[in-house]
Image 1 (tube, rainbow, N blue to C red):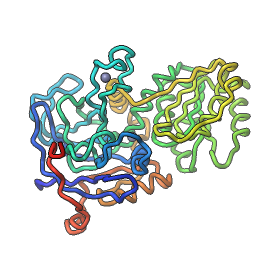
Image 2: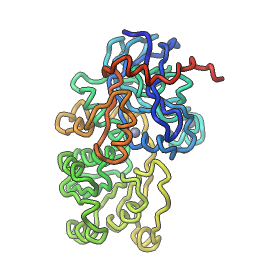
Image 3: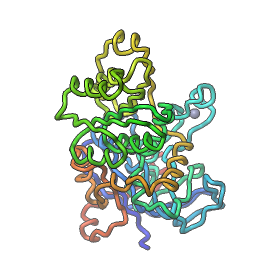
Image 4: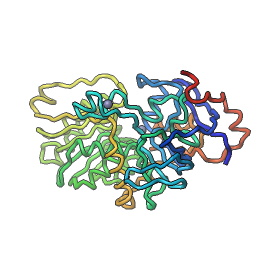
Length: 389
Ligand SMILES: [Zn+2]
Ligand SMILES: [Zn+2]
């Protein structure tokens, strides 16, 4: 194994991705080094690339959900299931770390995803602090990070196909309180929408509708469990509303999930829900602009219950893992990860993700690329962790 570790760095918004070289980090007690097998390019990474998220400490190593093999451990190290982790184990980790448990959001309001200390690998961790993102041949798992063994029956590609979208979907279904026999409509057929469709089916929803594009994603939406899909481009808002009502005794669905990230989707969504229904807003990870809704007809008179859904908690992570272990073979999660990219192909991966040419770009940091080619892309030798302080 080479003693240099290559990582793809987003130095600043709108700049080409750089390859940087890192020395293997010293492990603090309770830390581990994960040799990355798979990471992903998710919608958030595209937003990061455009600089649409505030408070991001560029340069960063993106890739917040990843999986691999524990290469070294400064143990003992306990997994989330309580058993000891060993070097050589296939493992996954929860990307959110340093949630404090003491701030008002944590301790008083019980909303840990709004913790003021919370950090997220690949998003709010600077590349100057070390290997804290998945677009890297290895990831430093600092003490306190939630780590779990990847079940033997779950492949790296299955795990990353679900990826951050599956974790979010677990949280969405919890927020929605989906009951057996209910009707649900999902706006958006990206990674979050597709996993939400699958979990709605597993939760016993009787009728699952989806709105999205392009056609390839609508096909996948059907494979994930949607009974009926509406092409966002080929149908109008009015047509969709009429058809959804026809399918639901003229009422609208019990639950609408917004996983599209569009202000127009939010405007449409409340009308697709029945009076007294629930509307889960989970697609606006960045500020996509304002929506214009009529509070009287869309919310107040409808007695509509609107719930935001931000981030996820360790319980969602572990339940996503259990779902993959027990039910993953019946849901084509790996099909969401459509194409695999090397570290030196991530500009293309971001462009493909943004244009929706593919459902999800998967990153294989260990994929062979010629040393010469990679050497030409190495822009700078990374500073050792802490040297910027
Ligand atoms: Zn993500
Ligand atoms: Zn906190």
